[in-house]
Structure formats: C-alpha cells, structure tokens
Length: 336
Image (cartoon, rainbow, N blue to C red; front, side):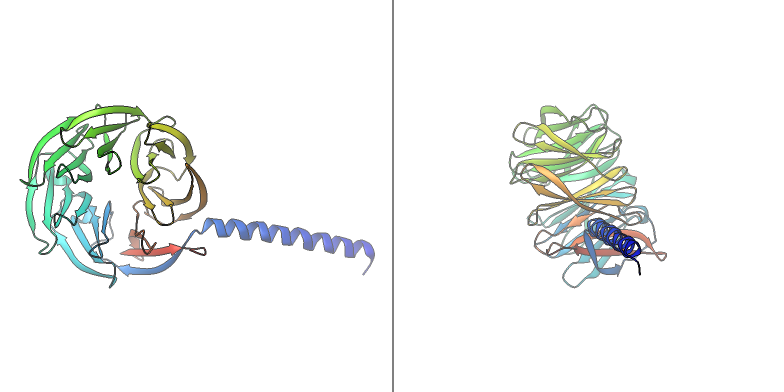
C-alpha cells in the first residue's frame, strides 16, 4: 500500500471514528431513560391524562380519560389494584393521604369526585365546575383547588364538608393548579394572560398576577420547592420557563417538544421531565437556578408523566402499544 493510500485510509478511519464518537454521544444524550417494564393496563386503547403518586401507600392513580375510568396501580407489586368506572372524561387526579381521599375531575359531569382510599368508593361528587382539570390541595386551609379550564376560574372545595366554596375568576383559561408549600400559596397558570396567578388558600383571594415572560399559553407547572423555582410550560411556543419564586421573575426559557403538557420533577436527582402532546419527552438537569438538557425521548402519546423521587422510577401511561394500553416504567439511563 502506497504512502498516499495509507494516509487516505488513516484520514478515513479518523473521520469515521470521530463520526462514530459524535453519533454515539448524540445517541446517549437522546436516550436519557431506560425501559424497566411495560405493565398491561385495563380498558380501551384511548387517551390518559393526569396521574397522582401516593408514595406513602405505594399507589399511583391514573386518569384514563377517554375510557371514563380511574386506574389504581400498586407501584411495589407492579400490578393494577382496581379499575374504577363512572369517571366521565376524567382529567385531573390528586391523592391526599392525610385525608385518606383521592380527588378526580369528572369533567363529563362538570364535577369533582371524592374517593375513599381504603374502600375505593366514591363519597361525593362536588360541583358544578364547568371544565374541571388540574387539582391541588392546600393542607392548612383543608381546601382543594381545581382548574376550571373553560370557565376561566379556579374552583375551591372544602374537604371537611365536601362542598364547593367558591370560584375565583382568572380572566383566562386555567392551566395547571399547584400548591407551593414554601409560600403556602396556590399557583395557577392562565393561558390567554400568559401569567401565573397566586391565590391565598384561606381567603380564596388573588394575591398577585405575574407575567411568564417568553411563554405563550402557560399550562403545565412543576415546582422545586427547596430551590424556590417553578417550571412553567408554554403550549403555544413549545418552551418552558424557570421562574424564581422569591420574586416571581422568569430567569430563563428552554425549548421542549411540541405542545408540552405534563411536567414532573425528581427532587432527589433534581431532574425535570417535560412530556409533550407530540410524544416527545425532554429531560433536564437542574444546576443552581438553570437547566441543562440531559436528552430527549419519543414515545407515542407520552404526554403525561409522573416520577417517584425515592426510587427515581418514571411512569408513562401509553394509550396504545400493540393495540393495548400499558404503563411504561423507566429509569434514568446513566449512572443514576
């Protein structure tokens, strides 16, 4: 072999190795999670919505929205405990272990169902709420706050009497509603206003309205309570914002999948999971008050996510895998 050919071969091999290394790095970054299991779920292969993880009892409650069912899943045994009927067009779900109750948005009936955790019987249905969606619980006030997405309001339910107390006008469609233990306030994303609204749970009065700069139609919210950060997703411009809860200002925005929906934050690993209607999941690592992209993953209809901050397992109800619904359980794909 002549010197020129040897040189060309060496260059070719060098370029190939560089290309392989670059693509290997990209591949590693594009797969931030590894599949642990696909557990079959009951019901039709139709859309799921919110989930609520009760770590204290090892149960995951899943809104099987278009099946009108609430799925109760045992995270330790990895099996379905119950599949509850009668939850028409169920959207939001929130487990409150200290009350022994689960609250679910029965959107088709314009009500919120209250379920006993032990018997799994429905104790009451509270309303009317025009379009109940996301749910949060304020423990000091013993009140549940419900996003009335099409009613442009937040509904307030007294958990001691199982009754509707009032509705709080927001001036726009209600995105997700969350409780911030650090401030003791309820936070609601408001679509058309591109704002976060803070509410006093005790008085059910609005405390402030804060622009989420760089976000269009804010919807999903997750909190890092310890770091005093909120993560807010914009449905219309496919970004998330990091909001400093100490002064309610946006620190930065980051691109995510098309039409981001549900967010989940692992407090142990300080990782943020952003699921989108496009089926694209974006995983971020929190560094101080900023985020670094760990990688992305695509799964059909993976628009809802929950995470166990103790085991670091991540849960995705997928409506159609080989014509059946499954709960895909995943774990971080690196040294974690």
